[in-house]
Image (cartoon, rainbow over all chains, first blue to last red; front, side, top):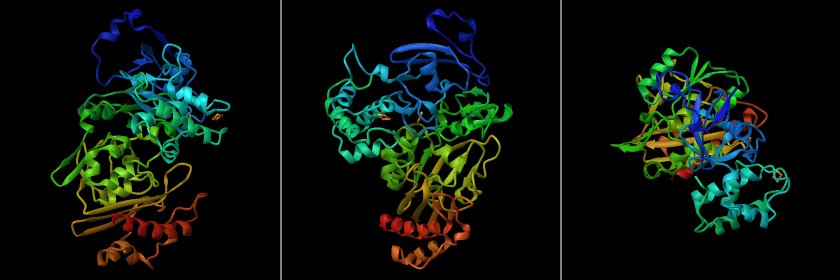
Length: 186
Length: 265
Ligand code: FES
Ligand code: FES
């Protein structure tokens, strides 16, 4: 259905030939957590499937597959998106950051650290999406977030365990600790 | 999903010819309705024509007395645009309450209006503000655009390029949102543009968005929430489902319309 190869290792004459604008496209080049990959994909392949099945980045979870739960949230060109509702081919030329791309040199990102510190997770299934959405909230709304803002902004992320209390606390603390920190690596 | 070909034109002309040349092709805008529908196999186009790289469909600007919004503008872009906030603040607010933040980063005004979901927010604003819908072929007035559930005046392969909203003196949109989906159970947009007063209702009608002429007449006499007292909405025109029965929706239309007028000031 698809194959993955490094851009440099694929001297394909066809790829560099000018394309007929009306021709169907099946090749994507996308930068994921700083690494550029080129792949041949089935047009049906969702970004969530590409990340999990092709790149083995299984930190991005699929809860509902119907754009409701937010477990699949990643950043595309610096903005939170639901990867279960984004075609891989539509990301061509783009830059994706997943939960695996947040920590730098083995040190947890301040938002990850805040989730740990506040016990902001139980089973952990919703957590990657929660954290990616949380970092996006800080990118849009700044480092000082009141409880009502966090709750409203997290409406696209569902948690079946925690009751949200500790998640909200974690997002507020993580936001405060992100001051001056390089935000998501996009 | 059933298999399809993916095309990504980089100009409006290319998009138009891709849609004409490719049998059974559908336009992909933000994809936040189309992709879920395809996953359920309720839609099975043979090809998707992705408009995300067509630059003619982008941009938000004030042109004379009108606010012009490119069809591929996302809900996020509309809700945060200083141009939109300065011209029609209620429209920015409407866009900021569609779905959730991640959905707003992908969903577009053109996709929403072209789909004409009976519970979508934008159709109420387009109709109440008497916007003009420009396509790659013609201009369509809002009154001629919406044709019932998921139906519009758009022809096969016709692409919405932009919306032109005449500057209103007053505008507000209030919705009673379904707590799970954030779609409107009832949403009412009220607008005063020059001497014209319009009231458009979404979410409620069993034939999609509609103008509430009795309310428009009452507000023309006196622009106040009280002017709507005693005006009823026919429950036989209302949608009825597990979320809200027809008579409840009919009642809500009055309540939400009065709130919208109060909010418009
Ligand atoms: S898996 Fe994408 S929103 Fe639930
Ligand atoms: S921690 Fe289990 S779903 Fe949120």
